[in-house]
Structures are given as C-alpha cells and as structure tokens.
Length: 249
Image (cartoon, rainbow, N blue to C red; front, side, top):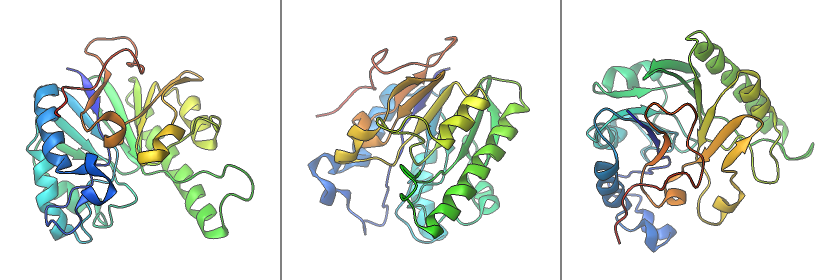
C-alpha cells in the first residue's frame, strides 16, 4: 500500500465549465488524470484529494463527478475546497459515496496505519493588514477546525497526515498559525492544493520544522497522482525522491 495525492480535479460532468479556458494543458484534463491514475494507483493504495472536486453548484449536479472519482482505483479520501459549493451536508455526502470513497470534514479517519485528518483551511494573513474583518473571522474559524481535526487524529496514536485545501504556508511565509498547529500535533505530512498556473511557484514543497509539505493541485503535478508515502517507508516521500505517475502527451 502506498499513499498518493492529487487535488483540484475541477470536474464538470455537465460540460458547463470547460477547463481549457485556463490553458491548453487543461484540454480534456480528466481524461489525462484518469489514464495516469489507472497506471499509477493500485487497488490497495490510498489517494488523498484535498478539495475542489467539482464545479457543480448543487449536490445532485455533483453526483456524476463524485461517481467518476469513486470508480477509480484505490481508496479515495475527499476534502472540501473553496469551489465545492455543492458540499453542504457531510452526512448526506457520506451516505451517497460508494464503498472505498471517504469524505473528511474537520475530523479524521484511521486507514492503512495512519491517522488522516482534514479541513479546508483559509488564506492566512501575510501581515496584519492582509485580511479584512470578515476574512479574519473565517480564518480564525478554520484554525479552530484544523485543531478539531488534529485532536481527532491524535486519538488514534498513529502517524498523522493532514489534508488542507488552502496552502498552510508559502515559500516566503513558512511560519504561520496553521504550520504551528501542524508542528504542535506532530504531523509528519501535509498535502494541500488551491494554487494554479503562475501561483504554483509560491507553494512550498519540502520539509519545514519536521513537517513534509506537498503541493498537489493537479496542474502542479502534471495531472497525475504523486506518491507521498511509499509502502512501509518510515517517513514521507519528499520532492525529488519520486516522480509523478506515467504521463500522456
């Protein structure tokens, strides 16, 4: 069993939100993801998907996209992103998802010898004037939710993997209240997404204060799930240790 990750699938089964408007690399991008996924992921593997799953606005509209994810190999763990407007009820989502596809929301699951937890996160203030009053309320709430998820994970007494949609740090801002929480709870690996295109260069990928961070938005990893923890390895895979799965031209 290996653990892989890929985020920001941005599916649109209805075809109402074609992604190629964001560049030619997004042309039929889910076909690329599906092909790479099937080549890289074994049924025994776990795949972390930290948010922005579907462009749907309502849950009924999101169902075809969720089923497209569910039919792929491996055990899938889903997280809510800022564009997942259809995600309003975690109980309804969990009742719908087929076996082998799980959803996290400010909580944790024990799987494959790991405690895997997750919450959406939020933009962090790079300075005291970085967020307005409403954004600061959301930011503070997301810090509380992250700690809830970490508390849930700690009770399993297993190595902790955290999933966030928003980056908990950036290359130029590595010490944040999010990273402080991850460090305090002894998180070994944190995967996140959200950053695309030119924003990818601001994402931090590597080891910082004992936590390995991996940016896994799909265009940052060439639309292929990337291995973030090898089977039976004592520590996470760091950038440069492995490559993303097979690519298509």
